[in-house]
Length: 257
Image 1 (tube, rainbow, N blue to C red):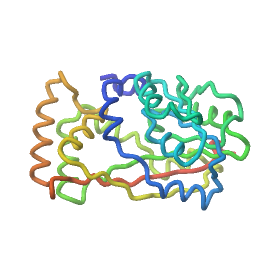
Image 2 (cartoon, rainbow, N blue to C red):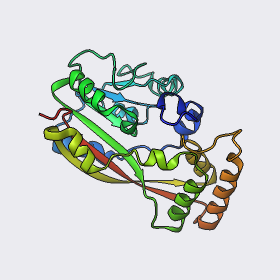
Image 3 (cartoon, rainbow, N blue to C red):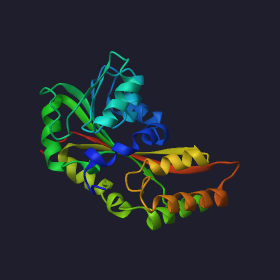
């Protein structure tokens, strides 16, 4: 495990990431359109785009999307899923040095990725590539860590079996931090409800998509899956469990003054 190197740490998780990571609620698009003037004509740069989950949301809403992703395996998965659209392309670059032309996009999106970035470097880069009226959207699907027998047990399981779960979880930014990062450019924050309803195979895939859990070949892999199966058997209802999320969205212009 390379603790804080997102360029490599997801490479062996791509298949599970594609199939089992949650998407983002359509209410997010409604909010951007109704309250912040975003239209389908806005060109989107999806930074740290991964396998294209957030890119798909904006592509299906009519936007032209460029996915900026330095991990080759994840970028290839995004191209396989979305590359047939003439409004989609992918770029091999980090969020801090996108290679995109100056003032070339209307909306910068960082979905489930901002905590991996150099926050001062991306401020300058995003200000460079955004058009004068452009906006930056930072969002996370934040899993609820308790409140039901399953959610309580899942959090306990991760803390007992995951490799660097606490370290990664602590990197997620809260609203106070994001307000400070945007500074005078901060425009709005909004939270949306989101969820996944999973059978045992789906739950297994979801947990294995996380970079902080032990993968095949690690001595902790089998004990993790055994504990996961016991948790599922103990808490499932009708053959399914529910992972609940809050999709936290922060919108603004990435400069302080």
